[in-house]
Image (cartoon, rainbow, N blue to C red):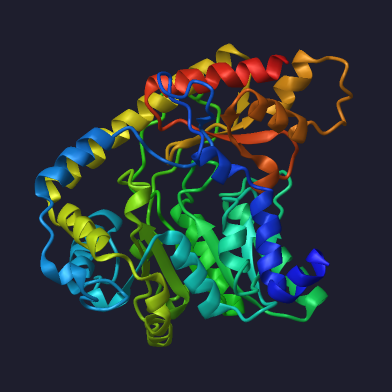
Length: 438
């Protein structure tokens, strides 16, 4: 009787969301976080992409500056962000993303985080059942952001032995597009990139970006470049020389699209969460420079992703202070490089394989399944152990992002987030090794 009543009360999409949430332990992790003094039995979290390396500096700046005007207790300038914030973003992003076409506040729509921005563009570009291309491996929450509420279909792109960020990968995107359209009779309406790449920690070259633009122009689909890690770029000093050389970051906005793609098809996302280590501020932005239809459509639904007045004010305070932001970004990049190097040395000392060539973002893509099999010689080479390793990690109270939820093409891969204080990172890595030895 209870199940029948729930069938009447809860929609099918709500049921699906419930199942999806139950498969992801992240929310339980948040409520039971390890602290060496107050909660030593909690989870050590190196699975969620948060950067805590510069929290003290950011808090000192914000706490000294914060004085909230009364207008931020009102609806202010509407759901798409205050004029002040959009102007500050234009100035800041012009310095760092170097757009070919100058940014204007009217090109920007502010959201309460980039997850909301992804939902918005999925809603704006694809009707239910229509596809958005997403290369594997991918940021796992892209699936929910793109498809859960609005019914767009994620079209995963397999690369086999091809480098996912190379020009050779473009043909794989085209293959996936044609197969989806032939199989379903529905159109592909967009191509979603995380640039720099999550979870690989690498940048797409300018040449690859141009070839992807050409592909989007050929099929008249939208290129969405999620550049939330754009300024979290650092120098890789530890990977061997014969590995893929790190590629410098260049924004999709910096490319002269003439003769390549209709600029109305190019859209860029950015936010405060990663480059400023401030996931909790909840400020993202959609940049669509020439597509008035998109701008108007998103403005019409901006009420549902209204960033709070306090967040709007804090973000504007920060982005207007070029002296602080320049020094912050420089120091953040140095600390990320140091933390990456420390983690790689640890992994190598324990024979754990990682995907090399990183110079961006907060994470390493590591093959824990391979190490687990080496430590347990009785396991057949063909046997998949990813789920077993995940269970062992959780039993040791350490949380990583599972490759199974990140669209890994091979079993046993996980994402380690290294942008944590050294003591936190040491505890996490120690628990990972202990789990693999079980």
